[in-house]
Length: 591
Image (cartoon, rainbow, N blue to C red; front, side, top):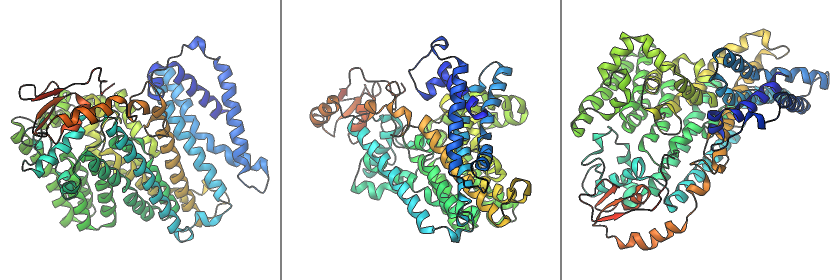
């Protein structure tokens, strides 16, 4: 009954609330009077829930037959109480909270799937015991196959987008230009940022790609390396989960959940036609740093931390906080130098290096205008007026953003105080920013929160594995030796199912709704089809402009001029351009 009513309320709210409907299926609109009566929807929802309940019970063997199986499956629907709670809160507040019913429903479905899986696995005790009983080879094969599929899909999407001339030059192809100019003697120079990219960010991890770039220069190589790096994140996730959960099957499920995690995928392929950013490499680097931090492998931890710091100046902050945690744990010789060095790296980069090349304050600080607009101003606001900072951080759009980050991973990161502490600066930098894209998963400003949600989910699950088996009232006839395996497997299925559900609703992959929505920027025909305009440009326009020329071109066309003398996005560069190349009716990259 609870699940059916919750499901009907979610469907009704999605169809009647324009903002929620936009997030699920952009461009659609329904009037309440055109929809079936709410009681009809409730009846249909209850019927669906009852059918699911009966079918699920058939997979659970019980000595008492189907009636006992029905009783054992019933608690799995308890997650749907969250939707009813949101409905009550919405009635009290007069709006907003029911928007989260979509996330609550995907998590509730994940909870139900995890519950049924654990009950069904109870008939196979080996699935719930020590990792020796699970096939390590099968688990590794599963995550490597998943990583290969993810890499193949995302690289194919990138190449189709490249061929279709639907990749924005800004914040994507500019990095191709930087490496090209670095090979020709101008270190990280570009037409937009001038002599050095350090005028924008202290970010140089892309330099490590130069040996490969010298062999195959161009944006396709950068997309290939980014896809491979993000796919490789399954390895540290698997190693960390196997160590913390002592269950290889659950570790594999967490790794696959990472691949289906929509915020990670938007770091790879943003909604604004961007397909490459060097800072995305911080995701696998921070995951490795978290694993080596947990293992106590300090030299490897420092190496992973360095690559994270090289990805962007603020990516060093979680590394610094890991150093602080190490110091609290008694490893002062390693912890304090890492903490002090990481904080110094960040401050020097933000207040010395970037201003030196930019000729003024870092543009990053402009994102915190409402918090003071400077390092000192932000600190003064946070510590001098904490209530204002807290109210600002808890505004609806920021709370919505954090739920979008946490819910696809089952919100398990919240069960790990260590993970929250390590990534607290990253959380604060997003929640205190007044720059609108900082509080959405569809851009790239949440990159440092991906390791928090994923790695934190593993650490949170480990705490649950340690605590919940001690609560005998929860376990009935389950012997103590199998309880930890039950919790680990439950968490793994919960994360994977929630992540897949979130990806279907909010992602832009071929299995996501947005991929098939004609009103969405992620619609496949908008991005991945090589139309005649692209064929004409590549065959006729591009060969007619010599590499020695300076070009000012519209957003998508400028992507193909990054190996020319200059590649400006129109109307920039008009004063020096030898050629101006414009596309009639070019779509807005933000639409």
